[in-house]
Amino acid sequence: MTKASLAELEAFATVARCGGFRAAARELGVSSSGLSHAIAALEERLNLRLFNRTTRSVVLTAAGAQFLEEIAPALAAIDGAIENAGEHLGEPSGLLRLNMAAGAARFVMAPLIRDYLSRFPRMQVEIVSEAALVDVIGKGFDAGVRLLEAVPPDMIAVPIMPQMRLAVVGSPAYLRDRPMPVVPRDLLAHACIRYRTGNGRIYHWEFARDGERLELDVPGRLILDNSGLMLDAVLAGMGLGYLAEQTVASLIEDGQLIRVLADWMPQEPPLCLYYSGRRHVPTKLRAFIDLVRFHSRTPSMA
Image 1 (cartoon, rainbow, N blue to C red):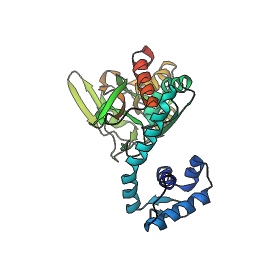
Image 2 (image 1 turned 90 degrees about the vertical axis):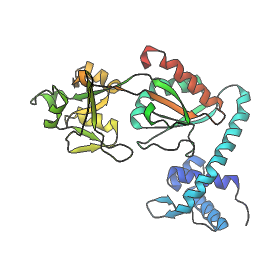
Image 3 (image 1 turned 30 degrees about the vertical axis):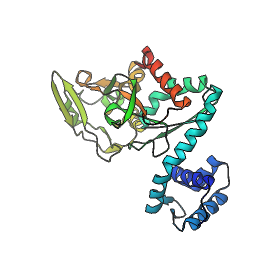
């Protein structure tokens, strides 16, 4: 059997990551048809079907998923070696890939990502937002961003926000003709915007005061899996939301939202950047880590 080329393996990994030929072709700078033919030739050479194709989707087969898992570390090592060779230029260059939940992306976009791109004009940043926790190394990411409690134990965590607080908020229009919640159980008489986590469960709102802690499965007809959509729904008067304080602080200040149950809100684990301590840390990631540490010491990121 003729050996597969590095270009073919990278093309296969890109199609798998992008979930289709069109998006992968744009990233690789080739035509969709040419990329499809290249993957078909690779499958023929390997005598293995890597993707199940339909008119609407391209999905890895079980054999394709196993093949990707086995070649991903080698491709990452090659990319790392290329990046390391470029480190002699002294300035970070290339693509920094980060994985995080959509809510976390709102916290790192400004000022972290904005500052990073401003400082290092040879760098590009790709953020993939998804609720589910993924193997950042196996999926080809340089690092991830999650709450500390979700960071895998074999990873190094660097706090982005040492303190995270949550807030229950509603719009003036929603609360105008409804009783203001005084204790958490008052929420049982309200419409709440519920959140489905990455593992598929409905999140129970958490409260704590004077040593008392409780979790409440709040009622609500609207269930979302994205904090940005939840905020939109709250602003539209569709119910109460349980959102990060940093996300809604300015909206509370200018009167677009009203905060309730403020004295019942617990402290959350810090939001962290995390990365593998078992691999060489390339210059591009080291520069981002240093920037995270710098911003975490400033009042704007506290």
